[in-house]
Image (cartoon, rainbow, N blue to C red; front, side, top):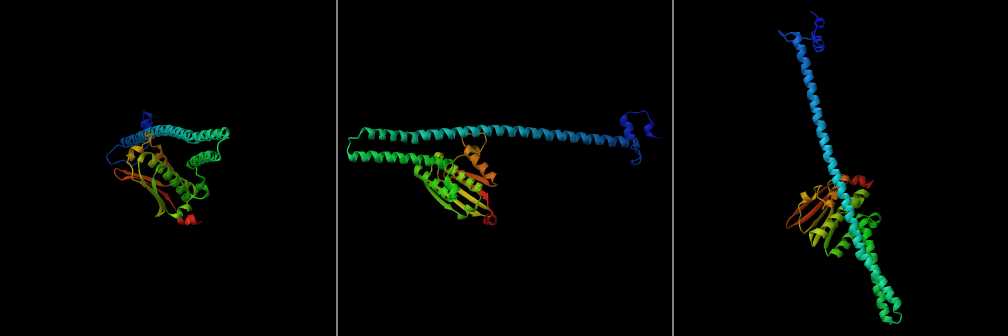
Amino acid sequence: MDCSNEPDTFLRRRSFRCRRTNAPRGKPKRICCLEREIAQRKSGEVAIRKGKEEYRALFLESQVMQRKLRQLTRQIISAQEEERKEISRELHDEVVQTLVGINVELSALGKGASVGLHALKAKIARTQRLVENSVNAVHRFARELRPAVLDDLGLIPALHAYSKSLAERKKLKIQMTVFGGVEALGGAKRTVLFRVAQEALTNVARHARATQVRMSISEIAGSIRMEISDNGRSFRVEDALRVKNNGRLGLIGMKERVEMVGGSLAIKSTPGTGTTVRAEIPFNREKAKK
């Protein structure tokens, strides 16, 4: 008997057209076709549920990423404002005050035409020292923003100049050992190493209360490694690297910079020992020679 001639629902009619397939012995062919249809529909429902769950998971993940991005944006804006505030304060405290002192000395020179030659020479010498201090302060600001020596002479002279200036201002002892082949790195990678060193040394000067710092750059298998260690106070690295922590955006910035050029950053801080910042950046000697 042809199942398609029976009055029934569309589902049953469509299922019964499968009657030519082999069914297990003793089992009606109609039941076999229905079971196959049900199994297919259940499989489709499972696939739909799975797709919805995956979509929901991706949606929730995107929301988390958006919140992190907004938080990071706020941190960047806050850090920029703090940086501008510090530059403004230093310009006022150093450059402006020095220029005011120069003006005062020049005014005194103009009014003191009758003073003796010895006193006049002393006033001129003081004015010259004030001008020299002002020029040095401006040069220091320029070096911290973007040192020209990094572009003109290379990473090693830039690190040496920055370390020397910081050591003199903050009364630190900085020992530096550098692998000369680091200059074969591309400009972007050398800039990353300089910024990591700059941020690490700045953190030492501001927060660590250290007296000694060791900085080394060496070649390891397929990479250039830079380590900066101090003997100052320690801190909780996990807390400092959290996105919600506004006080240590510099550490997050270091990590982002190094990862941007395919490298890795590790920070270890131990009570009684100090902190070590280690950055590793890919280095291919053969490509560097070309």
